[in-house]
Length: 489
Image (cartoon, rainbow, N blue to C red; front, side, top):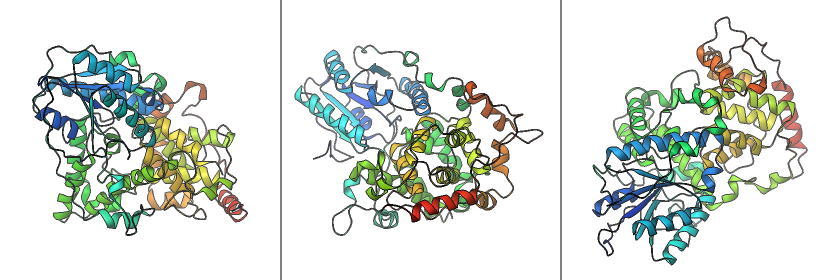
């Protein structure tokens, strides 16, 4: 059995003796007080609660932007815990070692957490669970950051879903447990264990000067996430089904940043979307479908973990993608200097804000994998280093979808034309003008911020001439289709 398959809304367990022994709640990508099953159950016991975050090897392996954003999230979450009469204990090291030492220091008999579903976290958590229980410490995990846990959704024949639309049809009518309230106060232990200082973790070190730029755009913490959802429900959801594909307007919820760190639960978003649907709001069902697409990514990741590291369709292993990550063409792609405005605007938006509009992500990914014939893993790694809303399952599924190598993927012979896509989705060029400074007499601040954020060694200047295309759309399409027709599978 995989790690910790217990119900998400368990009855509050009877406290073990001694009755005042604290409960350790281990926070990972679930930085909130509301709708947190493990925290809610711990608070209901009346026993002291010790919240801990661990900088373990999985945290150290994060890319530059996700790691910086996690640090910001921990800072704000620590403030929220203090307001509830508690505090966040920070420790560095192997997760099992840290939790065992903390249990010994505090006399805790229980360690509880919210489940994760990516293979690295699952492997770690299985080790932690077994190790703690071998020491007589109860390890309990609760349903985590999905609407429907991956093993609970099955096809009619008992298998897992490989195509999104049937998956959506299978879950759209399912009930989702109502979100839990935040505890008003958290009981404190008689003595707090020692904690490291967040600033000593230097979570933004790899971001260098880019951190100050991205910080202007980040909306950090549970309160910011709730405000974001409320604003979307007030002003955005009615037209969401039409505006979500238009990068030049504010047409999405922008909640991906907060969902990535669990500053808001997907169940909270789901119930808000359902209320809007019952009210007849036009874009509500499209919003719900996007939440389920996120679940679908974790459904696939759980059942086929290789989605994150290699071609989901093994026949694509024989395809002739280029594997070099530092060719002139790839370097131009990374720098937003391909000469293809839609591609470059997307990359620059990511450098400045830490996010990229979903339509732009499709175009950026398609251009790399098809026009530049470069392996999707290179793009996957680039996004992993630069997105503050980075999510392992969604990033991998998105790249494999665009490349054609994944489940429910766009066919490889469907090659997005980035010029006609721009005409369709950014007709007045609001998006590209916002992010590309070259050629504008008075470029907007957002476009100029790109040159403040990128590494100085790139030597880029807004007065530079905008480059000619490294690969023309027609040439790239012909090259991609020729490679597909001559494939070895």
